[in-house]
Image (cartoon, rainbow, N blue to C red; front, top):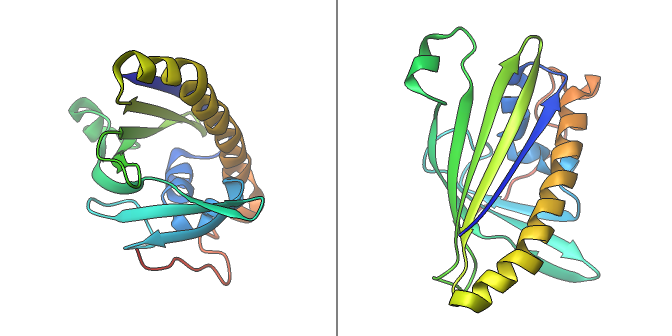
Length: 178
């Protein structure tokens, strides 16, 4: 099983980072090559929301796993009583056409003074025993780590920008049906 962890400091309050990170209308602002979002709701801040991202590159279109939000909760019960508790979103994905590749993603938004930290953990299981292990180590893990780094830095810049403060839904934003 592969595990990838990355954290990004954000010079914005955790509540704002959470709002930006759970608003599908804003995903195009920080996810490169994103062409379409198909979702059952415009926000992924509650249990049961399902969504798929569609990317376009060199004239080709690629779909991400079908994601479903499983949990939205304070990071732990001790944190629930804090005035600004860290929040976690837990989602599970399944690659299109595959019943064997399982992905779980947890994103945590935590206040640090007037700023915040967004931490992202992705765990995935590839089939194929040793071949799956080699694919994970030399192809999947480096590519996912690279993509997470790019998206995380772009997300932080977007959440920090004055134009995103107080304006969550950009004009003309559209989220299509699943």
